[in-house]
Every structure is written in structure tokens, then in C-alpha cells.
Length: 414
Image (tube, rainbow, N blue to C red; front, side):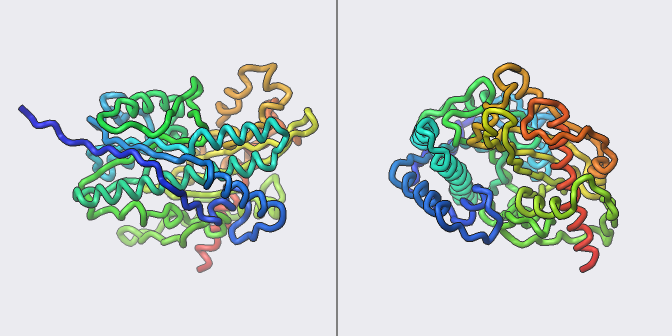
């Protein structure tokens, strides 16, 4: 009889979380190095103090009973999941196993933020919401470090995590992943975590993640040393956390000299594109040479007294050598945003949010295609009409093109 292998499992409730001030400022939307002062600083310190007293963060990790890669999917406990990017990363690293992680900033933060919003305190609501997002980032880093410590003693290496909702991993697969996590062996997750029909988690400041495991440690660095910014070539990014380490040229070959048109003519003023690229855009290089971009759009509704709203645009681009083809696109309300619910069509048109997330203009085309894209101008701040959504996608893609082309020219001049 084959012996039953002992699977790794861990449930933890950290006594404290160590949210770095610069990380909190980044999530609040401030550029790198900006000194928060006045009322904003008061609110930031209040949110940190409130959570230190009332917050109940936790994370839970469990090794999968089985893990396989086949037919374009990866299977965890025989359940198939589809993420081309994650599957390719797992294949390249020759991963043989996986660890599932659930974590949350806790329901207390969400309840308090909701109470503040109902009490017409949007400032305290916003700063508490953003601190919750910072706590989630800190928790996934902490969980990764704990996994690395365990894996190193087993002669294994932990790969960077991925989650439903990232790049090309459909958030609709989140319920299936949570169902697997709930099948615990010994430990019990420190708190309740649920998933809505939309795939969103409750409490909202929560995360499900998958970490791959590989025996080929000689090819990988420890997760705690693997900073995505080191693989990102966008020099002027306002959110950079570590210097870019230019990868060595392979076999003496240099990359394509001009993957993007260096003489691009944009529909938007270059000064605006430069500012947006520094203040609203963040880029992350991937192991396969592709690139993930996140753009934060802040605007207001056209009615209901101009309520502020925020959307996050995620664009996954192929490699520079291929001309940065647009592999996937997604636009969703930013974490904590409630302004989108005040758009005039939000209640009248049940399909509005589906239409927003389904928009993928120029999908499959190289990024240069945005330069010739003819679209109807629209100054509307909301997302109710297709022309308005197309206009905003144009702003996002032109900002991304400008940022990468600018970096391309900077590298050529060095």
C-alpha cells in the first residue's frame, strides 16, 4: 500500500501587519516620493490606527492533494482551471505541485467602511478601504515568505502566485478554487470567506491565490527576493519598487530595434500622456517576456451631482519582439469604488457592467494599432454609452504606448 503523503497546511492570524508607508501612499494614488500632509495624512494615520486596534487579518495555506498540467489547463484536485499565463509559467518552471492560499483583512474593516459610507463620511471610507487593500498585499507577501521558509527546508522552490481575476484568469473560476480550499484536512481557516455569484469574495478585502512548487531550485530565486519591478523596463514608472535589471541578450542577438513607432502621433496631448504614465500607470514584467499594465481611471458620473468613480484597466501585452500584441484586456470598478453604482444606466440596464468588462478593443493586434484607431470623441465621464467606453480605452492604450515608446527611446540613447 502506498503511504499517504503528509501535506503542508497552515492557518495563521498575524498579530500585526507591516504596511509600508510608501505602499499605502501608492494605493492612495500618490506618486512615488510624495509626502502626504495635512488632512490626507491625518486620515491615513487614522485608518492605520483603527485597523491596528480592530482589524483581524488572517491567512490559510493548503497543499493540493493532486496537481497536473494537461490539454491547455492546470488541474488542482482534478478540477480544471484555465490561465494561459500561469500554466506557461508552471510548465517553464517544471512545477510538480501547488499550494492554495486564502487570506483576508477581515470583515471588521468592511463593516466599518460601510458604516462610514452610510454616515456620509466618504473620506474616512476611502482611506480605510485603501488601507484594507494594502493589508491584503502585505498578507500575500507574508504568506509567500512563510511558504518559502517551508519549501526551502524541503529542497523546493515556491513560484510567484496568481489569482482568479489576474490577467487572463477568469474570476468566474474563483468559486471552484474556494470549494477546494474548504476541503481542509486538519487546520481550519481562521475566519469565514464566501464567494458571490459574480466571483467576487466576501469580505471584499480578501484574496485566493495559487503558488506553484518546483524541485528545480537552481533556476529560481526565493520568492522574497523576486521583485516584479526588476523585470519591468518602464523606467519613469511612479510606482517602481526596485531597479530594473536588464536581462542578458541571448546568443548575442539584440531585440527588435523599434517594436513601437518612435514617431507616433497621438490623439492626446503628449504632456497629458507623460503625466498619466507617471501617475496612473504601473507595469509588471512577466517571466515569459510579456507585460502586464494597470491603469487607474478617475472620473465622475454625468448625473447624480457628479459622483466620483474609479475604474482599473488591466492590459496584458505580448513580448516587445512580437510588437507588444494585446493578449487580454479588462476594465472593472477599482476596489472600494461605489461611484459606478450612481451612473444613470447602472440600475436601468442590467447588462451595463457586463458590457464594460466585455469591451476589448484592438484585442489581438499590436499596440501600434492604437495610433490608427478611429473612434468617436466622447467627453462623458460615465460608462453608460459605448462611445464613452471606447474613448477611455483609447486614452489607456495611448498612455501605455507612450510610456513604452518613451522607455524604448531612453534605452537606445544609453
